[in-house]
Length: 504
Image 1 (cartoon, rainbow, N blue to C red):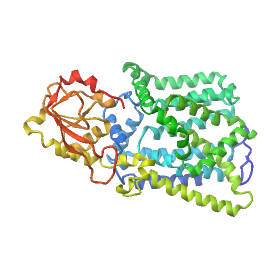
Image 2 (image 1 turned 90 degrees about the vertical axis):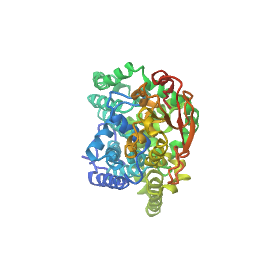
Image 3 (image 1 turned 180 degrees about the vertical axis):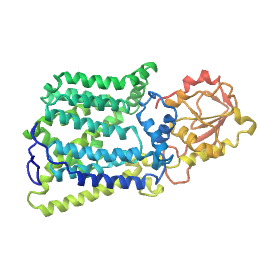
Image 4 (image 1 turned 90 degrees about the horizontal axis):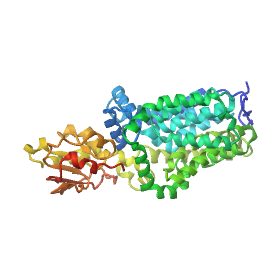
């Protein structure tokens, strides 16, 4: 078996034997990343989305209005196995980050990269800002990024070997991805368009493709049935994202492609793009850059979020590892390695500051929150519940059994549900996302209504009695949230509830 050495131009033509997998170095990178993530996993607290996943996991279903069931179920399983803490919840995210590092190295190997190229692909992935963000906390994007990378790896294996049986594995991975986020349909569509454009239409002319589609369909059938029974809320949510943020997403799309992984890594994934486009030895893998362009075009048309395309940039970064290794070992090695070392340090430091809770909360305001607002969304939720409890104390004790806590978004509801019992608070209600499906309050709840956020028009006799300040010095989304007491509602809860529902 040929093993590409440092500086070799590896034999990467379709069907060529692969280099040996650099198990030890890649495993070491994954272990270091996992150790750092584990040490920092409980530094701040739950993210608003994590609170929502915990609430959804307590109410298992085949779907929720804004997502399939996989992430909430993983959140529920993680807290049951590892503890109801941020650190316990985030074990699956840490493992997903480590798995993504391994997949990136395997992609580099699939394209003929030797030991050093595989190590570089793993290290670049582990140190990238976007990967650290999604591996630090549980989100649908955490598992989506991993599953997209797996689909990319399997597609490369299919094209390199010409063995149509890999369609079955691709179908299984797609089915699991559909259980996590419907967004994978965009990736599958991009690959379907890119294969013939990249000269690989023959990969579609096999009965194994139908077998793969069958496997994916079988796994996704319960999810589609749930969507059908609930009037396909995923389309409503997707339409709301495009309508609300579409223009901003289009304006920021190209700049964010340059910064999400790290500006330092732009030359690496550009090298991967050019390599797959030009190098005859890996022309069979040209589907990756073509799929990336197709996906970007689709996202620009639809107004999708810029980070939706980042998983393919992870794969292009892995593809760029081998030419970067050759550049480092050709002429003026000392100078080039010194430059690469300096850039690597910049990448690691900036990624850690932006993605991980290494700073005290007051230091987040400014550049950090501007680059990654998710840091601020992990701070202040117990304090919000405490503020709500102080207002709840104003409700006469005799009226509390018939009174309601209503929140404007699922983060607020999740915080009251998770931390409220310690302050004697009842369970919250909200019209946001799937919380609307878990309401309304019983019609006999005709007492006071405590609202977290501006009171809706359906509430009467409202007065703001507090403005939330966590006291932690973080200007996040909930800082300055008004909390009001309302005397009642304009009609019964069952009548006003449809008007209180909102998806964004």
